[in-house]
Length: 175
Image (cartoon, rainbow, N blue to C red; front, side):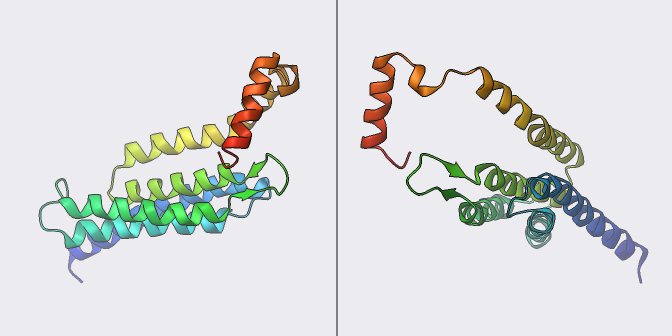
């Protein structure tokens, strides 16, 4: 085995490994909250996105810093596909104005992006995005609870706003 082949193998394993690890760590939050997409799903999404990003860099002509148009097409395709996966975990409760699974869908989407960033070897960007995503998932729930605790209930809003809200809901029920 050629030493450069060994270096390439190590680089591939590093990119895939870090993408898998970051996805899995984000998945811990989803598992702790008993959500459908947890450690395994997000680790697979991130690793798969990294692998497809790496493949697009490998097969496109040019050097790694300017891999060409193929990377952008790969990114577009992965994000479109991940949108369908995320849509599968979004549930609208029948007869209620409640939608569940949005955070899980968003975490799947971000995990794919983390995987692509790792696949392209952009470590600082991956770690910054991972830190922010982790912070959003860990601290965001507390912030949401505080906002809901102090926000006025819809029935306590002035009549004009409540009426407009009801009209909007009847005209655009899927929003």
